[in-house]
Image 1 (cartoon, helix red, strand yellow):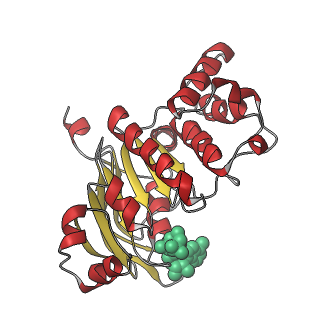
Image 2 (cartoon, rainbow, N blue to C red):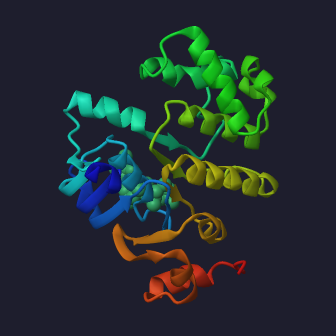
Length: 258
Ligand SMILES: Nc1ncnc2c1ncn2[C@@H]1O[C@H](COP(=O)(O)OP(=O)(O)OP(=O)(O)O)[C@@H](O)[C@H]1O
Ligand SMILES: [Mg+2]
């Protein structure tokens, strides 16, 4: 029980550098709990994608530690990494790049089910694909079509269905709507919101759009030059930030809905 009550994924006082390069993250702490969405904001180069890489086990901290279900994450631990691949799913910015044009939508969604060993047989995989398409508001018949038949917003919903296929406990979304037309952004955001609350998924949302962060994230973390300058409940950070940098970010947004 205790493991379930705590964060699914966390960074504790993490430092990080690429190879022998300069430090990219300094003393970064962050935790993701089931059913809650955290926004990660900061200017280009602040280290947001690097944070996601550490949480995905694609790189290891040079100081501090990454924790997965309470245990230190070790990239050499194959069992733990297999469990992480299933439990933690990324959603990327560009839905055009994240779907293979030669695979039908159904094949793309089913692929992680097989490769991660979640569903073994064809019939089970097909059933799950149809459920997932319905969950992201797409026609089940979409399964037999190819990605080029879909708009950017629809493709991003397909990418979300694919990420949800292995029933992850965590979604890590890196600017998931910034490649989409403004008209479909909110629709995709509402979908994230519904999924996170209905399925109790822990979510980290990287976005430069504070309107989106305010709509979706209970808490937010502000990164500047690889350091957390402020962290807390989103409404408080937006209305009375304690740090000058947060205030500047908020001021750069034309108008936030109340
Ligand atoms: N593969 C890499 N090798 C070396 N340095 C890298 C690599 N990827 C990123 N960096 C450097 O790490 C720092 C943080 O980059 P990161 O991609 O995490 O920032 P970001 O906040 O995601 O920026 P953006 O908003 O532009 O996506 C930058 O100085 C960047 O140049
Ligand atoms: Mg980035």
